Image (tube, rainbow, N blue to C red; front, side, top):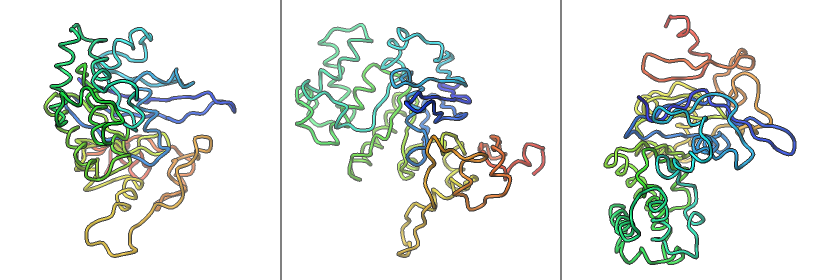
Length: 327
């Protein structure tokens, strides 16, 4: 049984100018102990997907209008807010984008870590303190007993991110969602944080949903990858299949934008145009205005998700013959 299964997820937001629908049939799965990368340009719907999984949409004028989110066999969409309070932090945990703003500046970092423990675990404050120090040590925080009593402004960006990770792991969740966790960090610290996430997934056996636009980070840590564009998943499969033999034109274009060793100056490609606004999604395949392999049918017909023999799912009319049993 999958740890998390998102099936045909649709989301709607209420705005001053009416309703918008940023997600249109998003589907993917995560197994226990597996790291799934959710990748795509800004505006693809990655963070909205995370908010839907965490049950946070009602707080930002949003709602799920279709599909299912099944976590450990339970339908998250049927949860009351009271049950969500029991699950958030304990079963599912979210690490937000910016560690600089995720910590309360007026509380010691140790107190912020043990808050989740005291809420979800039946332990004393002294036990929680020791668990927090042990957890900080496992995340390679130097002098964890001393850092426990420090305030966020006394820590570097890398240490702040480790504290935020500790907050996410403190109550022993089964699924950790990390939304752009390395964006505000320099390259060296990014590599350290990525290694910590992989280590946590392996040693603790938790599932990890890593949201990023950085394909380098995806390549280092993920077992599978879901490529998002304009509110849809255009390709989903294991990391080696997608990186070595991408099927969707968008996935191919993203990989061509990655600089490589030995590349000549001036040859780095870019995808023409921009991700469309949620108010102006085109008909048919949403990538067709920017696609190098566009055909006339792409402008008219929304592509179905097709399962290929390689195990990869792709949404592109180029592979429609697979639906007929040929190729």
